Image (cartoon, rainbow, N blue to C red; front, top):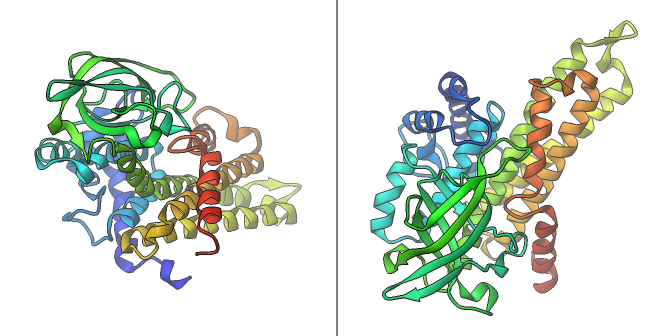
Length: 384
């Protein structure tokens, strides 16, 4: 497992992220639930956190390429502030397709503003009838002169309806499922685009978008016409391991506070940790956490060096599946070891217990990850 040990530079980078978050970002957290915290996002830009989203050069300590760096960022932030972590991740998810597949003019217009925390980005894939089955998209892109008119609805879109720029996936060719989807960059103030907030258990901003004949041109296409599904999948292959990293960071925060609790909490005249059942439970939770971290790092390393490219979707799916499922088990176990105190509003574990649930749903529910893994294995035989 030595290949998955962090280098000194990576450890320094993760420590720098945590310290910046503690000093400059956490004081700005706690904005209105379900709304974009723009002051916090701007601070993340000003202090260099957003510059590291895609492995680009920064003035901060040395770090690795895109996937591993993204995982280090998300894991470190999650140990300090789930709100900051989510804000960073949504910036990356919404803007990466532009950086990956957009024409230079779009990249120059939006990426510097996203990295500075001045423009809010969003990834608009899900629809009322196309969540887990993303190839069933119904948002229509109908030809209109030298471009298209977008008509339909998007649902469960993070940062909607407040984003300044959306990566939108729409159907340009009917009845061919994934082969007829195109990715577009759509400005948040585009005529005909409207939306509303949705209130969910998880407090990050999420909403509905309505497209009433929104015009997009050739210059707004990300990648090739009818090849947008590949743009979405390349984005998710990068970001799915980092969802696992988010889960690892949350689980680490839960386990750290629980170890401190069982050492100091006395029951029947002795520390709670002295009870064998408690000690063994801590051992099981820590083993789940370490297995999650290794799966995440392995998937990120493979993505960055290209060594496992034919199996990347499977590896990314495994990392997200295992780490998010494990995080829920770990945090639930930590709540159990704390007892009622962990359910008080404002307690760290109460916060983590609420927020961890969504990780098993977004960017592909756990059932979808299992389908990806099974399809790769069964469809490609014994190849590893």
